Image 1 (spheres, rainbow, N blue to C red):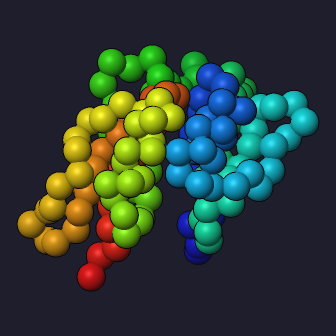
Image 2: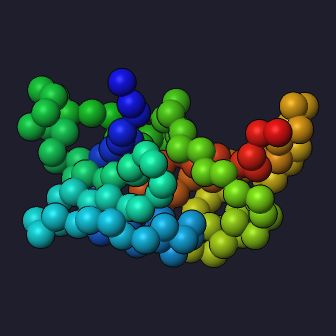
Length: 129
């Protein structure tokens, strides 16, 4: 078994791909011609976005959508970087909302939390040592 994908259902796949590319520096790996599914080059595990309407074709009744929730959903994407302050600030400049400013955790990691324009909860963190 291998963890292969995280797929986030969003209202606008192209907008989410663009935000994650600009704010976090990931390059586009794939965008289906329909615009309903796209992937970013993020390393070994793929970060993908799918049109929220597709969820209805997979699951009767669809899914809870992160962008429509007043609070972030209880799932986060963790992005590892050595420069939390710069990454956090850049994400804010591209439209993320700050949930928690960069700070050190008791186990030694520096961590911040952001909410992306599509509602995705992102943790920026330094590598575990």
